Structure formats: structure tokens, C-alpha cells
Length: 128
Image (tube, rainbow, N blue to C red; front, top):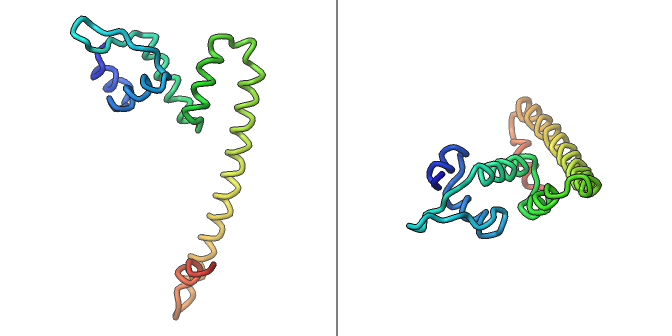
């Protein structure tokens, strides 16, 4: 497949695809005689893997490791499990922070509805 077909099918930009190749998340892509990139089904599967891992919150560095682990899944299983456990810890921390933020904003909104003079929301933003 040509680069335009790949980007249309996967919903990513040409720049993103080229960047993945530049940072070696994708192997060197085969080129036509005219110098155009020609993507294989394996290349497409690799990009889908990258996008799915990104959606789950993994960094590009993490994804590079995960891609390397794919070559020896049985031996890599403990390391992959460790990476995912760390990601879960991070996500749970973010959920706690977001829950606290939601509760604070809910309380500020309620206070704003019953206050006639100042705005408790703006007053709160002025706090150190």
C-alpha cells in the first residue's frame, strides 16, 4: 500500500507515519523504484499495534519495548506484565486526582449557585 492509502485506512497523518519510521517503531519501509514507500500487511499490523498501545496510555518508548517483546512473548511475559502493572498504578492515581478535581468543581459550582456577591469559583482560582 502507498502512504496515502495507509494513512486513510488507519486515520493517521503522513507525518506520524514517517515519524514512526524515523524513530524505528517501524522498520525501514520498502521503496518502489520511484522511491515511494510501499507498506505491507505486517507494517499495517505494526501501526495498529502502536496506535492501540498509545490509546492505552503507553509512551512511544514503552511501545518500542512492547514491540521488541512481541518477538519473544513467552520470555517477555513478566516484563510486559510489569509494564502493565505500572500503567495501571499510574491510571488509578490519575483517576483519584480526577475524582478529587470533580468533587472540588462540583462543590464550587454549587457554592456559586447560592452566592450572590463574589464568585467562589474565581475566588478559588486566586488561592495559592
